[in-house]
Each structure stands twice: as C-alpha cells, then as structure tokens.
Length: 171
Image (cartoon, rainbow, N blue to C red):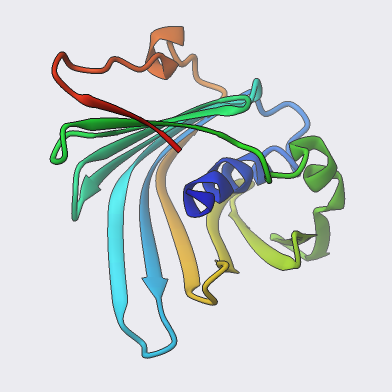
C-alpha cells in the first residue's frame, strides 16, 4: 500500500516548481527494477489536482484504479472483484515535502523525504520523469507523456464507483 501512497506524493511534486499549477493529467509508464534487474512495466493515466485528489488508472499489465482523496485511498481491482480502502497514515505532509524540493540544475529538482530522494525532471516546464528507490530498494522510474496542465478535470473523475458484488476490504 505504501508503494501506491508514494504516487500521490510524487505527482504532487509537479506543483513544487509551478506556483500556478492547478491540475495535471498525463499518460504514464512506470518501470520498476529490482536488485536482480528483473523489470515490471506498468502503463496508464494519471489525473491530479492541487486539492490532494488523484486518480491513477493502471491499464497494463493489470487493470486497476487507485483513487486518492486527502487521507483516503480506494483501490479498485476488477480482476479480483474487490475494493480496498486504506488511510494514508505514514505519508508525510505534502506541503512540507514540496517545500523541500530544491532545484539542483536546470530542469532537475530533488526532494528528500522519508529517508528517500525523489528526482524530478522537467521538460519544457512540465514534469516528464520521476525517479526514486522504493522501500524494497527497487529502482522506480515514472515517465509522463501527453501531459496537460491546468485543464479542467471534472469532479466526478475523482469519485470512485464500486461495482455490485465486489468484496470490500480494509487495509
């Protein structure tokens, strides 16, 4: 669960260098490499707004939706026909993290939080890549494509819907 919680923090870093950034949308490719160089690649879409709301839609290798709304995370897994509810307990204050993001060279920022360093890369003023090591020391790279900044995202985008018959779990 902590792995997904970091996503909310990560996308929030895009707000660190853009004071007027209100929303962010993009396609993404997330590449996770373990210490044996085994690789897992995820693809999908991200929607986020400044009000600590986000939706990560994973399309491959499995379908999954992860909704964030301040301290609540809801993971809907169609293949397992389940919805998992969790509270973000050990995620630091996003505003504090953003204040820690430092520009280290043109288009590159680093933020240190929770004994981790998050490297944020910009291209043409928009977040294009984030790299970090997760709790298991996996190397994680998230590449963003087709980014859209400050476009209206309908409020219903961030509202989850659990299909009838799904198991409801609390984490």
